[in-house]
Amino acid sequence: MEQLEITEPMQYFGPLYPYVTDDDITDIDICESTSEASYGTVWLTNSKNLRYKEMCDFSGGFVEAFSKRVANSVSRPFHKQSPVLEAETSNLRITIVHESVSVSGRTVSIRKSLPYVRLTEENILENNYCSREVLNLLKNCVAARMNLVYCGEPSVGKTECAKFFSTFIPDNERVITIEDTLEWHYKKVNPGKDCVELKVNPVMGYTEAIKTSLRLNPKWIMLSETRSKEVVYLLECFSTGVRGMTTLHSDDVRNVPDRMLNMAGREKSGKDMENDIYNFIDVGVLINRREYRDENGKSVVRRFIDQVCFYDREDGENMVYMMVENGEIVNRELPKRIRKKMNAFGIDDPFSYAPAQRIKRYFDDYQGGMYHGRKTAVG
Image 1: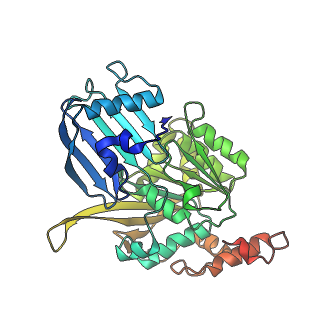
Image 2: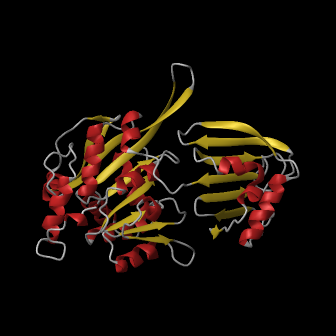
Image 3: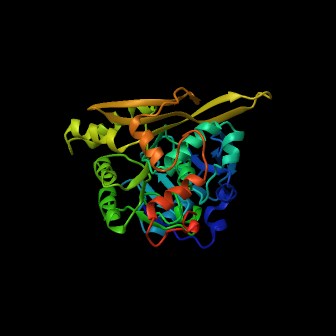
């Protein structure tokens, strides 16, 4: 996707500028019956995943002018023979579809990804995103260097959840992010932490980026979304001891292994691939959303952690251990392999989080080395 350089955003976005600069708005969508419409509907989605519409002044042929502006900015054609135009800035992804293929009229979609984490421990608990114990469990999974997959429907907030839990990675553990559209913003979200951000393109795809990342001395690899055959190389990467997080589309954590198998295709034998999934993926997290009416009759959307599971392979058998269902803890017994990982990092109670556990880990990791006795290495 081509990168936009915008020097005068107010003029560039015109009537859309107030929505572009409103941090609470995540998506801006226009669908016009004609590109010359003078007045039209803009559909907006906010950070609470509520979707609503507003009327917008498109006089002067704004939609047509905006399309030309974007096309000229990235030196790309936009007409019947080239009906899809895509561009991005550091925090915006713009897609325009020509009316020759979009029968309802020219379509403009602007998706925003801001360089900060919307989730905090305070609003997580206040908004019942998850309970304190579930929050502690997942923080401990990061502290114990487990591999996590965040799944859910499109736009449910998978990346936002992953971004939040990635903030608990210690400062001096190098993180490599791999994305086609910049959403993680790891360096800006975690200033001062050791990070390399890779952006895939037609020259370097996901598979090559994963292979390249292994030569950059990573402790963690963050793959923005697992979609296809790159899943094979991601698992091979995890098999070397590198830790990581990724997102994928699935409506149940129990379906994640099958989704990964389907993505791999014939890149690797089915049984070997299945065993690798249960060996090297530790945690599955499902993000869900439900809409309801508050006491005033207003529509409210609640996003929450619906499911948490551990994947395990024991005595030749692949198992899914459900820990959380419908947002509630249903099991407090961890698989032996997961319990062993927790204990190795000084975590005796997985549902209780203590930063001192991380200090113990660093003393164990670097005992006798250059970091011996330095608590400041924890971060």
